[in-house]
Image (cartoon, rainbow, N blue to C red):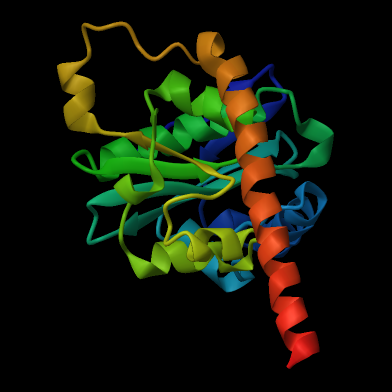
Length: 233
């Protein structure tokens, strides 16, 4: 059982249950709105899917003491439990930069480790803030082809505006960064110094800007070439 946690005597982060089913619609709407604002994608999920995760005990929710929704995340498994992803992290705009995202991710990580202790926990993100949270939990950056080969996982990226980059490069490159927590590697490296994200963050930020320019520039050139072919056909 993942215990609830009260932050600053105002917020409760806990395992979602049947009492939270009525919040599924607003969570889905906020996920979609957030993706639009960032100009990137997030796997679209229906309220029914979110409800199923709550009932299955595979979701973490943050609320005020009065029960108002302020954050959410759910757990998915791939390749028969070989990989686990903490997906759909979303925080209400009014409560961002309050520590809620970090608390939710920590609870989702705890839930994943308890339910699937042998699984590799994976994630993809364009957010340096999420990378920092992940690195604190023991994730390491990895290439995308080290993540699951499960087609259903990658299909979740299809709603992203950058999906064409992912498919065009045969899942080798995208604007997202892949991250992984490998329990076996964590055991081997427990006496070593963990990856220092803060030390490396400026380098990663620079690399992400370069990668974005290169990939988007190439995509623009190819789109123009296709357009010229249509016009001359």
